[in-house]
Image (tube, rainbow, N blue to C red; front, side, top):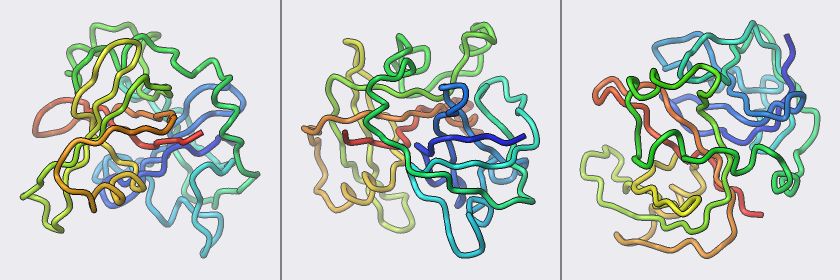
Length: 224
């Protein structure tokens, strides 16, 4: 089956890629995954290509061949990529149209609660029809925190977000958007208010094996 989508997330995952966006036929969210458990079902760089030399770019409109819908009960938006085919670029998505889409600010919470993660048992108490793992929001306020990260082998700092959404605060949300992490890695340790209007594309990650939690991840900051 072919899926056509606007690419809103192309973020690092297990040294490969988390790929997600908007299914343009359904006007709803979609995540493209592999079948490789050892990389937590990320898409390999070599498979997120238009040909041997041309990688996909954020905000492209892409058509790819999928094997089937995935059966991940925590991520109902998933479709399994068919890695026998290159992807096709159809065009570039007009980001301004996001402001008028029904999926913007659709959910009451950022993934069911106000913490930075959620337990599988919490999700299991939610009906299949009400589960979701991708969302697009226009936050009321955003602060970016730059924290020391002595365990990082490359010396990078820990970048987190405090997000106010529908009058609730969400603290220490992980950021995988590389344009944000690369920029703020050069900042001093501290807390910085984001003064620009922004949309946040947020994903609920795979189960973290050590903590047994699904973490909330800001995968793309879209400045409109």
